[in-house]
Length: 283
Image 1: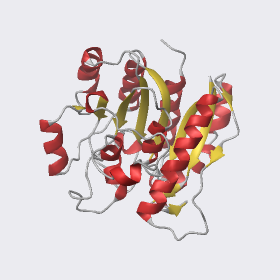
Image 2: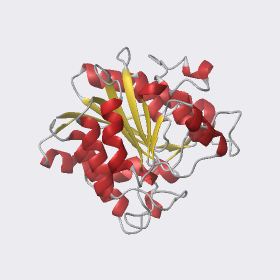
Image 3: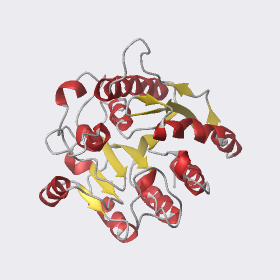
Image 4: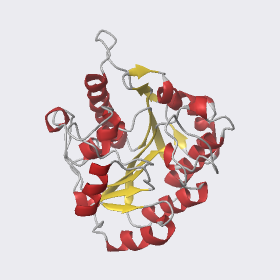
């Protein structure tokens, strides 16, 4: 496969800090060489950077980066390359999804958390906790409209996978909405059935992987917000394979990896395994 890696090394508007160090760490760990050894063609990675002449601000910088990711994803696809986004924050996937329009899109959001808060429901004020909600058109509509190609993803084409730490408003949304949510424990059993029931014909898929979806005890700690009872590497790669059996992927993103917490390197190895599953030859 022809691959374009897109680096977004920011966490809450700070370059290289915390999960912002993850994208370049994966490169330094040998990701490009690994992919080439697997037979993939990998272009020179594209670095997305915020305007250094402007003061960093979580909201403003976050949406600036989303806009730039949208442009980069669209350009990669027009060049016949698969966009693989490596980002500090999850909200880069809003940009990636915008780069896939006008195609109808399906989103598969792997995360320990829901990322379904809005400015009205968040108690932390963390922009990234609204990332999935933004992609679904539930908040930040004015700013999102400035992302080239932005269009909200239909709720019935949205999957939340492996989440196990939900705020009450997020849980209420899932209970009363049409978003398909599957816990870590039930993923292998329930996901194939949900995929077979979903209306995915003609859709382009986007896999978003927050690496804290992985189990911190069995795999490793991905960042400062560990949640127990997550996915094993086998569960994750099996789920990706099941998704790819039902929908063609247009892009993928890995996010929220802070290597300072990954003492044994298990999360880094899991990230490589996930990328292999994402880029494997079609089943």
